[in-house]
Length: 72
Image (cartoon, rainbow, N blue to C red):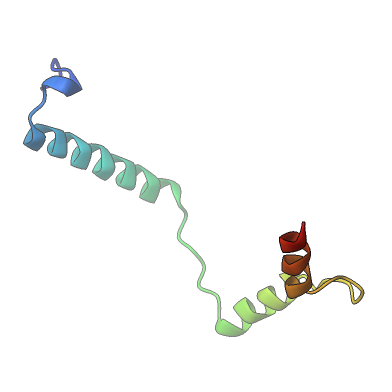
C-alpha cells in the first residue's frame, strides 16, 4: 500500500491509513505530555479569580457596544 497514491486507494484502505496516522499521533502526543498534576477545585477557582479581567467602570456595556455597532 505504500507505493499507491491516495487517489488509487480504496475507501477501506484510505480509512485504514487515516486510522493508522491518527493512532500514531495519539501515541506520540501521550508520550510528550508529562503526567498532569491534579489540582483541587479551590486551586482552580483561585486561578480563575486571579486571571479574570474586569473592564474599567467607564467602559460601555456589551449591549451599548452592540447598539453602537448596529447603528453604524
